[in-house]
Length: 390
Image (cartoon, rainbow, N blue to C red; front, side):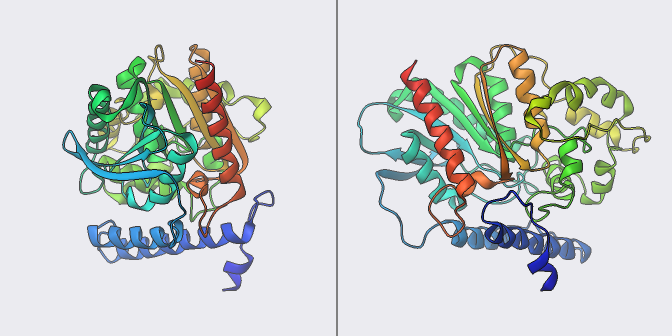
């Protein structure tokens, strides 16, 4: 108990005790997950996923619903279940966000995001179509990507029936959902108006970027190298005992590391003016694991690692949210920098007091954070400004 109450929390975080509570919940969940793995029990079984969903829903979805003008319907688009959040104040066609939730391609559901998505639809005056895609380890890559692509294509083909604006279809996702949003945007390119990437997971090549080094054990209940490595392995359908191989960057061949080094080198793509770190991406020197040929092939697929695409032309306008206390911070910053260099319109919003998943707490709930609310306000202002000037 003493350790919990006195575990260091970053000094510039607002509402530190609330964050301590969230972080400790994550640490407890991680401990239980590791214990189950040690006992030979699959922690990401469907019954345990239901339990995790229930706990998170109780914390993030208010018991008493705050009145709004949002209608929710459950539909099936191209064989995939979705929840549609529709502002009812206007009858004219509205812009839409097709939203892919986070959770390491494994955890959570649209239901755990319910209050956040209601608030998001209400504040942005967008229809929000949230996809309940298939999840690992029961359904591995490319199942989640295929579900999200199928829903997006359905939306593109049925704008009139859905009463949405044909030229205002955007994608959004947080964490692993940001990965899927970026991958679908690469596939559909100019058909998409905007991609909103919130703390996205974009690459599985290098686990020694500065943000992985900076955040090794700062808020390990929310974000840590081990946690992210486990998520990637589940998505790939690979055994979790390869975590240490990933974390030492021995999961892929040195040839592949060399091929993508310039895309992942913070020296080239993390601008100094952001003042996010004093570290540099570490170049791998160790010999690769004998299983590296499997990862070499996976990583070359931009549907899996969208950051590695070299075809950045005609990608949609991009709004990226990054957090100082997130191991995924720098890959998102580097991707935004490369997009800018390629002539894509990009808005990068970096939150010095943000943490992985913080945007999820922008609505009124037990765990609302001021920084989360501010991030949503910034996004709404950006959307309103761009809609006015288009």
